Length: 138
Image (cartoon, rainbow, N blue to C red; front, side, top):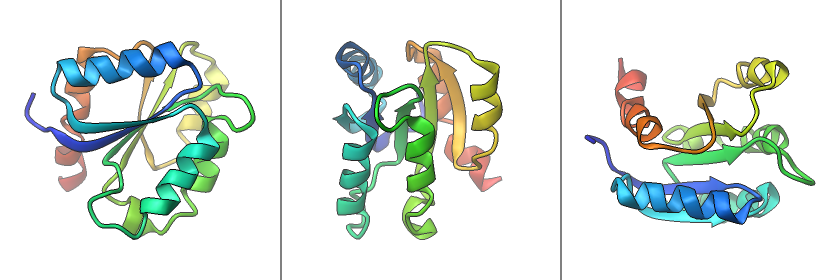
């Protein structure tokens, strides 16, 4: 794998899914650090707290779609309110255990979402994500 990220943020309400993603990221040396939240609201609080600190904002966000209280799309509606210069170097990836057509169509309405993957996260997904900086610079 070529690109290694500094920080990845995992947002998933399921403990085992978060743990599995952390282990896959570590096993493939995909990022120096992972930060995990079990709620979209908690993750938004975190992002707001680091938005003014260069280098602390994650480069990749792995976002579950289906979560209680605030789902992945609700998160995105709040995320895009952050200043563009803060989120410009961050790639949002949505993950889901189901492939509902309406979810796929809705994902396409957010230019900030760079990928949609079916769970579980795997090495192939990580390899795909290493090419994101190249895609954006071309």
